[in-house]
Length: 159
Image (cartoon, rainbow, N blue to C red; front, side):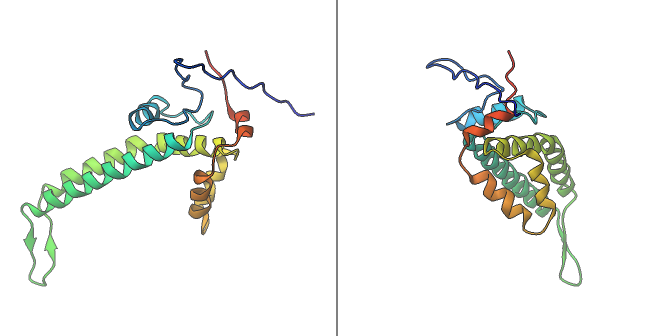
């Protein structure tokens, strides 16, 4: 005998989507806000737009931090006798910022991937496929899949 959880009521026009529910058609800003609001929430689902807007934002931040690292490393850089260069002392500032950004976003990013897998009706532990050869490709394909209504089984409605 299987237990089937009743589907939660869909929000009506003008009504905000609760934080526990996936936000389909999320805007860039709404996706980023929800990402940080659901910091370590591995329950529920995340729509494709929630997931891919976050990925875009994360890539943009990484590009800016890498550019900052290059600029700060160039200032005060020295050329060694063998033709290699050593970055300037300010390069460490960018390195610290990159590490802080990574540490601040690793848990919520994992939670977001987990919820995205739920939305495609896969169990969150499928994320661990990334640790096997070609597993990254499999998880990438899973995140591209459209929402599956059967993924509602992962929802945990809250007031």
